[in-house]
Amino acid sequence: MKILVPVKRTASLDDEFEMRDDGRDVDADFCEYDINEFDEFSVEEAIKIKEAAGEGTVEVVVMTVGPEDADEVLRKCLAKGADRGIRVWDDALEGSDQMAIARIIAKVVEREQPELVLTGAQSSDHGFAQTGIALAGILGWPHGAVVSFLEYTPGAPSLAFRRELEGGLEQKASIPMPAVLTIQLGINRPRYASLRGIRQANSKPVDELSHTDLGLTDDQVGEAGSLSRIRRMYVPERGRSEMIQGTPAQQASRILQIIKDVRG
Amino acid sequence: MAGILIIAEHRQGQFRPVTLEAVAAAEKLQASSGESIAVAVIAPQPAVFVPWVSVSAVDEVVTVTTPNAEFDPDVTGTAVKALIAARKPSVVLMPHSVDSFGVAPAIAAELGVGFATDVFDLRYDGGELVATRAAYKEKVFVEIDFPGKETVLLTIRSNAFKPAGGTGQPAVTEISVPGIEPRTEHLGWQEPPASGGIDIPGAEFIMSVGRGVGDEANIEQFVELAEALGATLGCSRPIADNGWLPKARQVGQSGKLAANCKLYIAMGISGAVQHQWGMKHVENIIAVNKDADASIFTVAKYGVVGDMFEIAEELKAQAGGN
Image: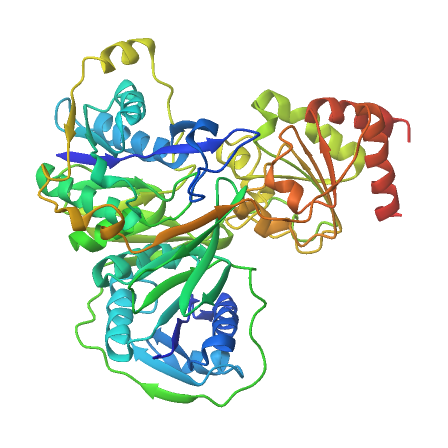
């Protein structure tokens, strides 16, 4: 069987940052990039299913939608044990929202025919929590969101899982295959890549595809293929803490005074 | 203009009050658009929930009867899609909840309606709907619009709007939706692990540690510090996920609400919105973080930009003598 794991390269901001000239995102010069934290867990879950099955019975394919720099996150997944990668990009994809990205992933699903797709429950930069379930909607596949436990034996007609709800309550459920699940933080303990894994990752294949390779037209991707548009991004004026200055000893002394004042 | 539709939420037979926060968001839009507000109740016995949503802002309650009691994205999705087709609302609002995560994106993808999630403010700008949300660990706000979309689906962040109140007399309309077919088999519930005597909701003084603690070996000194200060020890999600502290100590949306807390010290917690949900209401928050831009400093009354270990050592040394 095949498991497809779409991953995202997410940005975190430097201490000081500036907006892009068009005011619709942060200038990339002030961003640091890494794999989405949630995707570390979906990749791990896929590799765990692969390892629990017999040698050569499960293939884990990781994919991302992004420019060449995004190869780095695919290599990271390959180093941990994914078998091969797919990166989809061309200039027309600039400005794609989550829905357009989901449409691209759906085309990769058509091409690859996996039985299971595991995505992160959301991304650590924007936190939309849209792509995975939008993908399921496009495919018409059964799905479960915010999965905190997963039990699946390759070849079984259904899979059982738990969804983590508000307050830590979990719903136990089962859905037929093929399926899309979005994975919650903490479902497993993501591994670190071994040195051997890192070496092997360089020889694993990463296919590069454009939207036309996948049979998508220009109006299905980019801003034209999106359901939302970022109009403006800005640093809000917000209330800010009264900052306690001084040496650590002075700061601690002030904290103790506050504790005393509040606690009486 | 064809009205605002809100999808009510319930779980284990209980109404979920976040629904009334979505009603309040609708009221804000209504103030400029004048549109009517309808709430949809999708449940096996929807009548049970009608009184809960009959607040003064609501003009109509539409009910859809379903075969299964617990959340199934296909059941909710089919019902909501049918309601959107029948009513052509200009705006559909759902709570930004785990159940919405499971169905709203599929609805948006299938219908091609405008879509934004985790929205905490919304307004009309010259007839155009603008939704505001945050990004990059709450460091920036983002305005989103929906060019050319006649219907826009939004999920509303909890605690962003004060729940709508008052008593209303909405008309109740039953709508029959054909083709509702459950696809998720509900197998039961798993309650969160027993708290083992840890009482975050009841504690008046909490000191929580977050990712800044860095390593499991560093936890012990904060256990000791909490004891020395007389605080209940709490934590943010990554600490509980790593198994460094029990889940019962986790403050936040998937953990506990610091319901009775008067003083909250956040050590090495950047202030993800899910954590803030559990503590930002506390009157006296002291945040210690090495990142001067951490969003925790937008909710804390007092802030220290610095090394949480240095501060902890000083606190321990100075408190020890008392």
